[in-house]
Length: 311
Image (cartoon, rainbow, N blue to C red; front, side, top):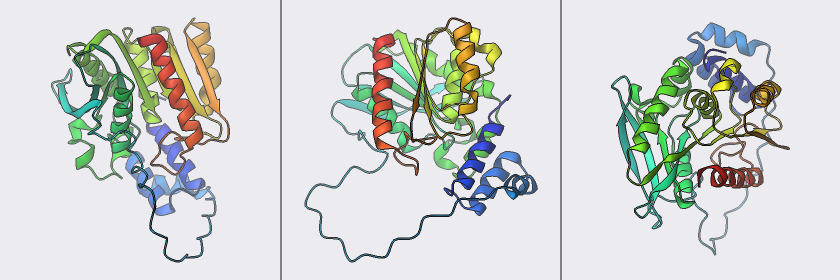
């Protein structure tokens, strides 16, 4: 595929069939991506959604907690953690646009290795900011650009608009914004300019693949269930790539053999991990498909990959 439109269509149809979103929600999302309610309706016409789980019988009042409450979903490392610094930043894109981003770093002068983070199709939300803070806690500078910066930024958009916008933007724009992010990081005195990697999730995994094909200076990449890049661009990849997949991911997994063959045939450093009994987006602890055990293991593998190739 030339862009991410087909990927988003497959993802939203899958969410509808799996019973994660209503028909109304699916129509709204698909219409935003395709630009047509009629096309959206035709995509759902042959689909039979799963039955939603039965609602539990209301229980009585819960007893008062005797221990501290668990952290808010999506916040594993709070912004005020004393071991890190985290804040919004901006940097210029190649076309002169101002890119909004969120940067987290360990306290201290550094320099530290850095990891660029690409968000999912929901934009730069709190979960992705938290991923940068997790990286900072582990000793890396984490930078997550908002790929909706030219549209005003994720926070200023209706969440239902976001996939439609991203699905209709040429992928080259995303790649160029990460090339600009790379240059921004290289200019920071607290960053090791020759030790910069990248991680992306879902749509962001697909962007990570594409950035790796066009940014030979990238030192390591981790792709969480991302769609393949154009296979003819694989020879341009210089970074070792760890690709993480979910066993029940019906719209990304069919591409695994092709990318695995392309990486092997071109002599690239590549490792593939498929987590059993998991679904697409299992790493996102704010989503309905979150799998805590798989997410913890995948994150440990991610940090080990960066330790191997960025430290």
